[in-house]
Amino acid sequence: MEEQPLEKPIEKPIDVINENINPSITKKKKKKKKKKTNTLPDTPGKDYDTVARNHQSNPPSIPVEDLWPNHIFPVGELHDYTDNNLWRTTSAETRERDRIMTDEWNMVREAAECHRFVRKWAQTQIKPGVNLYDLCESIEAMNRRMVKAAGLKKGIAFPTGVSRNNIAAHYSPNPGDRNEILKENDVLKIDFGTQVNGQIVDCAWTYAYNMDKYGPLLAASKAATETGIKEAGIDAHLCEIGEAIQETMESYEITLDGVVYPIKSIANLNGHSIAPYRIHAGKFVPNVKGADPRYKMEEGEHYAIETFGSTGDGSVVESGDCSHFMKTWNAGHVPIRSKQAKSLFAHINKTYDTLAFCKRFLALDGQHMFDGALGQLVKLGLVTAYPPLCDKVGSYTSQFEHTILLRPMCKEVVSRGDDY
Image (cartoon, rainbow, N blue to C red):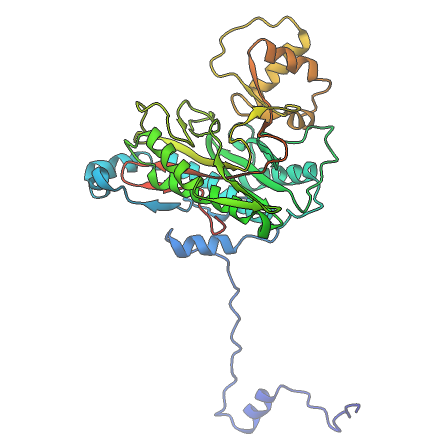
């Protein structure tokens, strides 16, 4: 029903009218509404980190450094050392050494926080029918945005790996590979890294749409990686870690199309130590028993613990078109006669230094007709090629990976998230 107007409209506010009737009635002042602020708590800690994460947009668009304006980033999952290293937890001396390294740990944590945001978003994009070229490009664009990429100071640590089925690692689409589509029965390994001032976080997981079929394969590599993390520590023998990883991995089996397959730990793929701007810093964490017993983990080291399970031979070979490249560490001076190769090498030095890159990156940089020049640099030993690593055709492989810090007083799984 239509509302009828009052016969005598009130022309003054009701409180003014009341004031005229009775002077003792005073006019009420309206309270000003306080503006809601999005300021963070003053003290870094669990609440501070939660509030900062809740400030992120969906999809993510705010760089991590802008979410933590004091630039103190969340600490990863902490583990006390056990057995002979238990004293480190309370030692004043180790606490002081840990404090001295705070700035370095904080840069790794910033990279880890970027990785968590990017992979959480990426997990919403991965599904059957996705184009792998587009997936890599979008993950890398998000990675650059979250880390607020600034040349060698901050950015992508290496190309995004999207290795399917029997390909265990090092596959990323080249500029011409635009027709690779993820299928329902594929097993996909997603491996990407982020770096801040050369401090690298290397972290990977496996996706399978058909988890009823492939669940045991993923569970095996996930459990094996957790075993590697548990066994890692200062003075831990790398060979013993490898033996424990293999024991966990090979306690699993999987039934595919009525055939039971033992899940094997891939013998010639390893975890590795990490140094500034060096993804492989010289030490390797084996995935099987039998490694050289002389090598140990040491205080202050930075490791990627990654394990690979397979329904195939448990061994990989290089196969297929190469996408991953990296300037050879300490290659020394080698004369380059080709003008084009010399120009490309100068670009690699300036843009990537010893960080890994791929052909897509070079194309994005505006480099043209670089295949021949890149081949020459590989032949001269100035650049190393890392082709896809494949088990036998028809097999399936899985991978899980975390980055850990062997701090003086505790072990920190810096890349841990609520996803894995």
